[in-house]
Each structure stands twice: as C-alpha cells, then as structure tokens.
Image 1 (cartoon, rainbow over the protein chains, first blue to last red):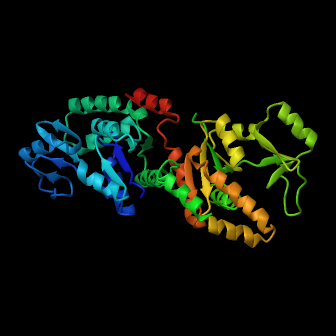
Image 2 (image 1 turned 180 degrees about the horizontal axis):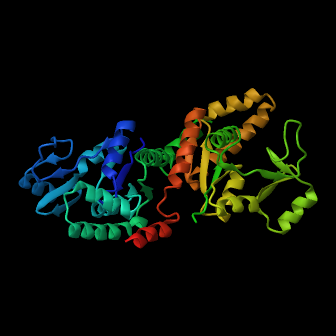
Length: 202
Length: 202
C-alpha cells in the first residue's frame, strides 16, 4: 500500500503558518500532528488540541526511547513532535501536516528526507513588523531582535521544497492544498505496484 | 523576473492527454504550445489550432536552424515543437503546456531539464482497450500491437516527475492544475530575488 506523506509547514513567527494549517485541516481533513510539551497549559488551551501536555519525567523518558521526530528546549520548557502517532498515520496511507518552527523543520527534514517541506513567508518585512507590533506584547528592542532572527530564517528558504508568500490567507491555503494534491501525484511514490497492475491485466 | 515553467504532458495514445490539456487551458488560460507538421491538414483542423502546417522545405530549414525543442518523422510526415514561441512565453514569465507523445516528451525533458513532466495513465489496460476498440478504426491485430507499445511506454513512467491516472476527467484536470500551482511555489524558482527583497526592506 502507498505510504502517506508528511508535510512539514514552517516559517518565521508571525508569518501565519498556524492559521494556514488549521484552514487546510478544516478544508481537506488532513491529519494534524500535535506537539508534546512540558509547559503548563494556558487557560485557552485544551489537552490534545494545542499540545499534548506531559510532565518533564514523561518527556525525558520519551527522549530516552527516541520517541520524537525532533525536540527542543525553549526557555526551560521542552517541545517535541511524537514520532509514533505520525508514523502510524503515514503507515496506514494517510498524509500528516506538521506545523513547526524553522529549527524543528530542518531537523525533521534531516531525519525524514522523504517529507515535503513548505516555508511560509510573510508578505513583506514591513507587514511582519506591523503584525508583531499590533500584538502589543513586545518592546521595540525585542521586535527588532525578532525581525533580525526572521531574516536569518528567511535566508534558509532554499533548504525547503516549497515556499508560499502569505499575502492573502485563502490563496495561501489554496497553494498549500495544491502542493498536497501534487505531491500525491509524484511519479516516484508507490509507482511499482501501479505499473505491475497494468502488466498483470495484459 | 521569474521565468515561466514548461509543463510537458504525455502518455500513451488513448489515455486522454489531449482532452485534459484542452480543459486545463480553458480553466486557467495557460498557454498551449502548438506543434508544427508537414502533414496536410484534415478537414476538421484549423491552421494554428491543431497544428501549424508548413511545407517540407520550411520544416527542413527549421531543423537546420535548430528551431525545434524536438521533432520526429512518423509515417513520412514530420512533427516538431517550435522552440522559439515556447521560449518567448517562458522568458516573459508565462507558463506553457506541451502535449506530446512519450518519445517526444523524453527528448524535451532531456533538452529542457527544468521542465516539469506529467504522465497521463489510462485507468486500466482493459479500459484503454475498450476506448481504442470503440473508435472502430483498427483491426484486432493492430489493437494488440498498440497495447503492447502502450505497456512499454507505461514502464517509462518513472522517468517523469508526476503521474496522473485519468479515471475521471474533472479529477485529472484538478490534479494537473494543482501541479501547475505547486510547481509555481517551488522554493528553487526565482528565490534569490525574493529573499533580497526582504533584506532590502530592513
């Protein structure tokens, strides 16, 4: 049976990758990988929706079993992509979309080279600055630092398979949906069985 | 400026590549490359629509000028893909779709490795036999010979970038349209300028 495809959707913070992925899931029903974290849930967050919330001990135990596609420590909390649930869906022929930061995406691409990586770009740096400023949660110095980091991340776009500029949400989702359809038509995937089925009919 | 992409759509005779390409052109307005031939026009054919009809002398002169992406002689008539018109559209940033037989497609892919090749498969060999029989223009022996050729062509599907099974026309056109959108989102295409535009804004 044909294996599913892992779509790794990434890009700088503020580019809109989360919204795009949610809309893709709503439209197409593609499975979304939910990350695991040791960070305590915020009031708006539900177990298994934003994250799977686990204790630090449980997380460490999973690291020792090599149970993550990738993981990272950020400000003292751990975040990771559980390998097993993703592999189960792929093995049963389903596609999975994984929304993740740039560092995590490049780790996943390295450990799963057959995955398809998509970089979401903000329409412009000016627009990104506007979006971050509008949140009102960060100081000017912190925003400048963030935009500097963003530029470093954007320089890595060439390491991705696809790149979508998130100018209008609907168009960006259309493009991501088209990438999912196109990758499922790749001649390299599950081809031997297909060709054999034609041979057998003769 | 970003260069256009050449989509080479091919597959065995009877798979429906012509219908799919016409429908893609109708839906998306993508430019269709029209082949040149020395064969005289049939009554139903219009100059510049099915083919550009030229004299044998004119065709030979074009061969000597290297003016074809590929050409072939079939039953004493010449058929070729004019390079100039395709290149003009690509240079101006437009995409082009080229519908062509398997031998021609592989020649174009060799001479234009940056082109995107799509193989159209019939839903099954039984269905293909039915379609060819329904035309009523060929003997049983000729049909068997044709299906044997088709199998040889299907074995080459791995040399293509994409493969679409033409089960239902609408779905096949959806897939081809998705491939056009996805390829236009490839991270490799026209990327340097994009990244530089972000740098300049800072």
